[in-house]
Length: 112
Image (cartoon, rainbow, N blue to C red; front, side, top):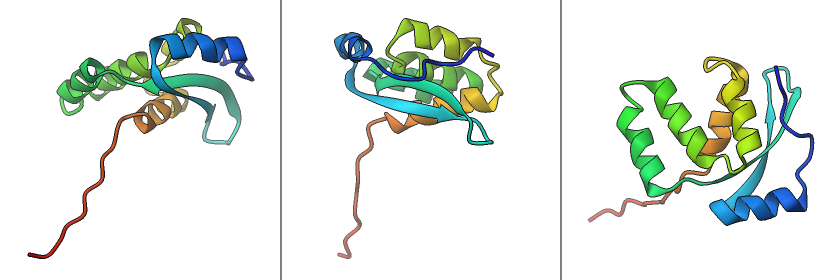
């Protein structure tokens, strides 16, 4: 299994900021807490979010792929992640990072 880079360079961050908003670096881990390397994830576009929501209840693997491909900033990292088995813990770690980039609002209930 191919691993991601062990560090993020300023050049990688600059490239990622050209294609995505709110870029963050995530270190991915397997279930034994071994590092799989670092990847840059950005906030997914509204089209990516809509595609993810369209398939989330019908085909979870397709939904995960849409979200990961729309969130991973650099092609090299995206290629490595897509080479992993779709039902592996490595791919699940990438999905976890991508899902953390989804915009989330907050609501509080008030008694009326």
